[in-house]
Amino acid sequence: MKTLFLVRHAKSSRDDPGLSDKERPLNDRGTRDAPKMGARLAKHDVKPDLIVSSPAVRARTTAELIAKKLDYKVKDIVLDERLYAAAPGDVLDVIRELDDKPKCVMVVGHNPELSQLAARLSGKDTDMPTCAVAEFAYDIKSWSLVGRDEPSKVTLHEPRRS
Image 1 (cartoon, rainbow, N blue to C red):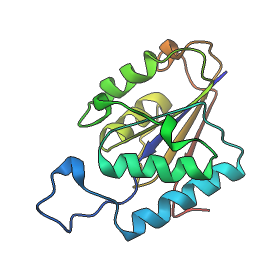
Image 2 (cartoon, one colour):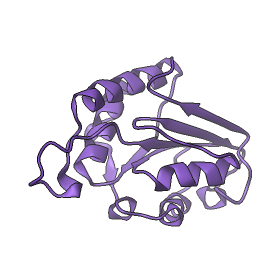
Image 3 (cartoon, rainbow, N blue to C red):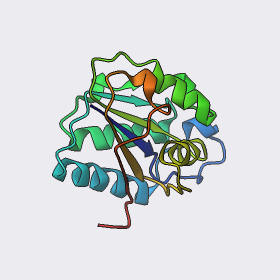
């Protein structure tokens, strides 16, 4: 059994036009939503074995705020350049290349690729607002099978819904 969480970064700020896209931080709403989403996932006993994030500041900060609520060590978050400015297939490649030891993996990245990948994996049109989490449970032993086998369960957690 493998469980995959696709996490769209929380709401980011565009207040400083001097920052590059990769350096944009979370705005106030983002810094409120990410810990709330982490707390909601913790209530559902989510315990990731691995968190992989885009290195962009807004994604990395989202990953850190959620990780703290899930008792996951921030220093153990893996930053993967392939998750920044990626295509859905690139994100899927990152997932399929994971070592098979972790049972529960969280991938933190960006739109539109995460919504597109969530739609591809679920077979349903999926729109992931900022800080949304798409959860996929698979009856598989290898991450290489994600996207080839159907998930046994799909859940979308949105910050605006309890």
